[in-house]
Length: 111
Length: 117
Image (tube, rainbow over the protein chains, first blue to last red):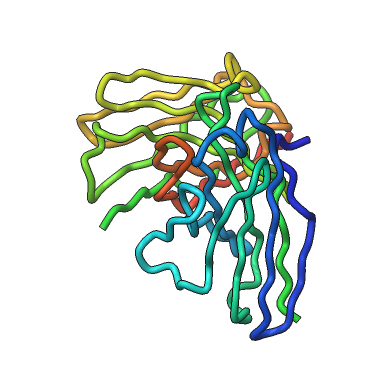
């Protein structure tokens, strides 16, 4: 069982917005602003999409945004596109491990 | 451009040893932590451990402590992950990635390790 809880799957139609949640505790998500999100297409390496809760690396579309409230972080994708269909993982710093922890992953299906 | 290039896929038998590699370029290899992530078939991501090539300071996840060895050769900007005795349960994709608190900015392409008799 992963330390961070994500929904197994979410879906949306092109053009719509979806939100993926990532729930932890005050020892990880809630206690630090070190939450990141990764996109992984089948057979490919993960790609950083959001870091430090809400920052986008250069080259990531502004359709992707991150936020946090209490022990839950969220990734929102607006204007959904077919190419957004992938697995998404959250990650957080945690006081119990230097390395940090991942969520279990969420499969996004674009209908 | 930052790049992490990993060694190719491996097929091994249980009990055999293995060392896979990850070569960094486009940045100061000795100034950033680099780590290894396991992804078992159809499963999620797990941190195994990280190393700081500048002084070889190494940290392991408790789940992988004693099971693998992480090392680095800063003269050739390469990090390594090795096993002394593979098990079938080590079958997985292994990724190297740069590491800073809460974030991994750059990832290698992955190395598939298959352990089967």
